Length: 297
Image (cartoon, rainbow, N blue to C red):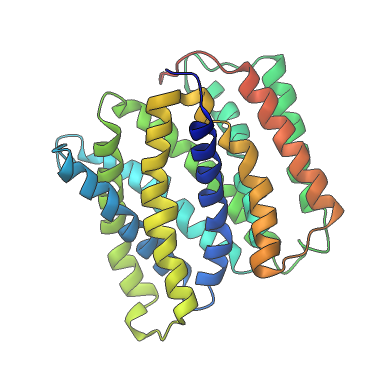
């Protein structure tokens, strides 16, 4: 791995901006599309650049190989369920809150990795990070201005969605010997297969008359925030390693708040600022303690 250059830091910042921008675009997409349709279109459009890269590099896509059940399981748990829960929750919750709630992923990952992996065990620094980070989340839920009886469940569903990301990430360890491009393309294919009948049955999107604004947001979510963002993440991982790439977690909630304010004029309360600082501090302590390679027990 090379020492990070100005270009590397620029690309890391761009990745954080892209992932942060997903939240307000999900909000705009919900103005015209249902949450299941958003999940389907996001995954479908996201698959296009990834599959295209596999074809260009002549990488075999093993979606229907003997390991199909792993790809199918990860597609369901790591894409279908969280994408749906986030889109459903953002209908009633500000996008900046979604960015903060999703930023808690490294914290829940620490707890689940301790329970289900051999090498990622809890220590004092990790416990401190988890407690600080989740105290910020609890504090955020006490903000009656932004989270109340009408949208409490929606906010909780977003938090649950972030946990499914972690579970899906742990499952990918089982197929860690396969190329990243193949794994990503395969789980995107299976996620699309799952969502087509569900979308057709529950939301009948062909009856919609969506706005241009919402349609642009859905396409952006797929092509840019899912497909191209993954390719950019992979480039950073190859050149600079996981530790460098993981720093994106500090930037996402910050950019999420800023973008939500700029594009949707979302309210920023003192509790939001305190919560995001607590989450970032928690992530810092957790990542400071991480070192060993993870393997499933």
